[in-house]
Image 1 (cartoon, rainbow, N blue to C red):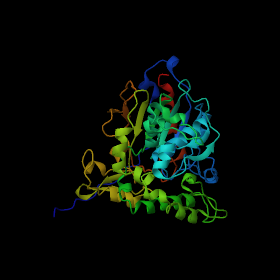
Image 2 (image 1 turned 180 degrees about the vertical axis):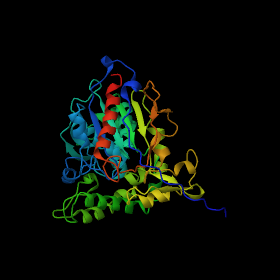
Image 3 (image 1 turned 45 degrees about the vertical axis):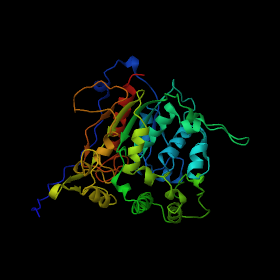
Image 4 (image 1 turned 45 degrees about the horizontal axis):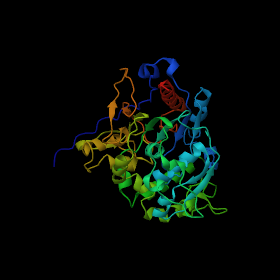
Length: 416
């Protein structure tokens, strides 16, 4: 056995810096756009319309409000609300109706295939004028990245099975979402996005326990007791409704026992590396959309090539961060490349979908962004999967506000 090397000292936390929109976009202000921004939460996430979202925001935690900060700076911004445990397909359908308004239609064929109801909740619509003339910018965190990609794919290309559906006498026709031809998204920015799957989700037996612990931790941070209302899992189409007087602990337990986990129509399957491989073949990178990504590395070099979580990583993430740091699964780029991670997602997964066009941004070097190319920003060091959206563990809300304001500036500087 080779001699073990001493672990290197962990790096100092890297404060996320705002991208320089003017030098990157390189266009005159006459070509800039004023499209609104939609913040797309990830797995275990929540929106502002839920009781929990009024105590503790996904985008800003208890100390901040990234949506309202961006609004105060002149960037019209909305926070989406989708199923925290649902599949990318179901979440993309919910995101579509969240923006445009209406009762969620998951598709007649898709719903029959997986055995859930065709229709879900009703959304009033935050941007009903959404169209090719009135596009949106999507900023997705974690599973919000592949969910946004699924939405773009459906908008532009539709789904042949759903488009071919012939409704019966008591059935509604196919939703416009599945008919394609909609170039309605101007940009997608992925922050710690799960573009190539998460090694943590590949452990199918233990991943539900990770989800449970994340929910419990979030409730604790928000100061909610075990019997207080938490948030809606948006699993009505799977027959799950909160019962009167039911606390979040029992609600979480029932949610994790649903039939959805016996299918491939939930987040546990969709976040796996196997599912991501198929999604990357199906959900193409659009030639009509600008793409950017930020990966996070909350680890430092340990003995024999492993990666060790930094001391400031969220304690909830350290066990999974350490497990990923020991990875021996040979994926794109080699097993060692997948060891640096943010506690849940490996750096290569967050950078770009494997096999898709991409370019790595060199710090301080201007570039001319093109549609259909993933522009990979330098990896953010010494941070984790949670504190890139919520101020905690040495990251302040001022730093997060500046980071997302920089993304907003960059997106609005893109040619219209």
